[in-house]
Image (cartoon, rainbow, N blue to C red; front, side):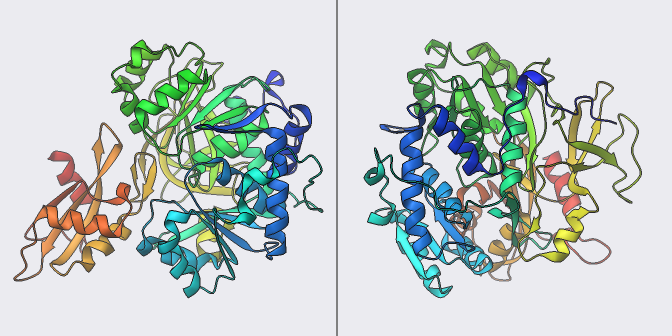
Length: 519
């Protein structure tokens, strides 16, 4: 089906920029004294944001950041935001790691991206520094280091970005996701494609210029987090409120305190947690006008409850680490719960036969969603075979199964791959399986996703014990907690005598999902 809205509406068109740095310079020029970021009691104007980026960029350039990967490991903050733009201004490529990751998870990522520089939150130094040394990282700095101290540059109007600035075709960010092997791989976004993503995201919401107050709770290491803090608010010269850690009571209080107009909530688990805040209905959220959701399917009951509590619906957006946004329910058209809305402007989405990847499926018939648009990645970092599988000709094959309805809206009904989405985070079962296999009391194991009304999906693991071993389900879960980020830890472990197998003697995960669904 052809995109019914192929162009950005005239009233929602904004200036075009080559890179995020050009986008930010535009905001600084027009609105230097407007707050760019509010984080707790720390805030920064656009003019000081620019100065801090320029100052930090000069230091990173002196350390050899140009053309190199720079790892950033820190929770949401003004400093994280400055560091990302500073790496770009120094001509480097940003690699954002999730601060929740354990040493076990960070090791393969460090080895894969081969960074020259690592910027780390001081409390995480003990975890990351040994990995940096093992991977021959040349410069390891914590955010306590004077070279990264943001406050020293406030008020300095003589600082300028290093020149020349990056080009639109230069690589900007490596976003780690999972591979067909279950091992991590990095989706490479160039500078221009990040700007296009921000432009399309802004067009969905129809945000005002220099008048919106955003609030984001997603980690800045996640694609939703960096679009909703680093890019889209800057595109509109707006302010973003950042919370370092998701605490429902704090989020509601910050919404009211700062008169937030746009809430970049993300997955349904966030909204469900906020709905449980006792004083939600008594809190003045009268300025709130746009609430965005994505990362997992929303139950209609959640959308209705949020509307009853705040007077706002939740506009779902579809995207992935390899391209975002791809589709959404625009704020100027009726919202249809359960759908991901229409393809974004300048974006084609086709529903094709999942077997041959070519034949177009009729309206209402499910197939694999393939996309073509200016927000697509250029490929995976050092993964030519997986890049060739993902991008065929002009089309990116998403692995999502969905269909169009008669109105041109898209609905996702399943996934071609086994990925589990827990609270908006991608979890790849093999990674969980390998941790389970490493337990001395486990002979076989398999993790699958099961529906969860709170988080979209939860992880259930089926385990066959080794002969003579008798670990409890709780002991196995505790073992996983030591090896995996919290969102990857199985919620349920079920000890079974055997696992179903396919004719090829492989563990039959489809059968396990059916068993889990029945239970």
